[in-house]
Amino acid sequence: MSYPDQAPTRRPAVVVLAAAVLAVMAVAAVGYAVAGLLALGGAVAEFRSAAAGTSARPDEIDGMVTLLRVSTVLTAVVSLLGGLLLAGLALGLLAGRSGARVGTWVVSGLGLLFGCCGLAVLVGQRAAPLRLGADERTTAELLALLGDAQPGWWLPVNAGLSVGQVLGYLVVAALLALPAANAWFRRRPPVGPTDRHQPPAAPLAPPYPPR
Image 1 (cartoon, rainbow, N blue to C red):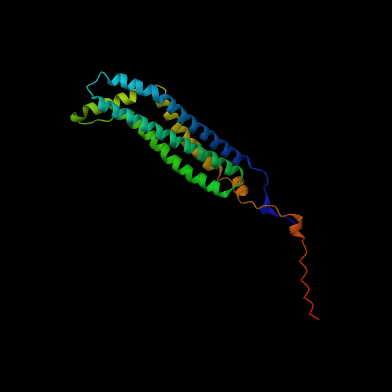
Image 2: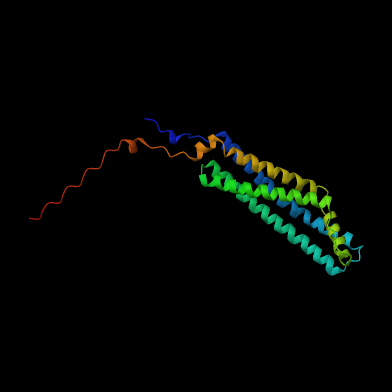
């Protein structure tokens, strides 16, 4: 007797590859968060040094420094949480949980959206810089200095990660839609021989009447 719904018992290569791509993306997210926090101190010092030669007031400079710190910390927290989520999804895929595959598709869709938005923002910042009114000239000057305070490798790294994020999610979503992945996530646990040929239980004997 054959049991086609019980195969395969080994992880298909496409599932292992999808989990590996998610693991690499998780490591990249954690590394991005750590790099951003490590570069924060130098960026603040560079910005304060450059802003000292402008007409900005000290409270305006402090406000921009606070903005830089808050945005960097929030970005790092989101990246860390995203890395943990991707790692959990990778483990769920390897364990054959169908919910992990559905969750991966949802995360992939959101990741594609955010990755494309991130690329659009990076391109827009270079193609059409922010322009403010004449009464906000100081703010515009500080914002420009805020961007220049970041390390030279920061913008290329952000662009590369955005492109890698889009490609990675596309690859993972495509791999999990292949027939081999469908068979892996729809499999059933094997039926043991005792379950197949177990005889029916004998009926209980009626109790003897009291004497």
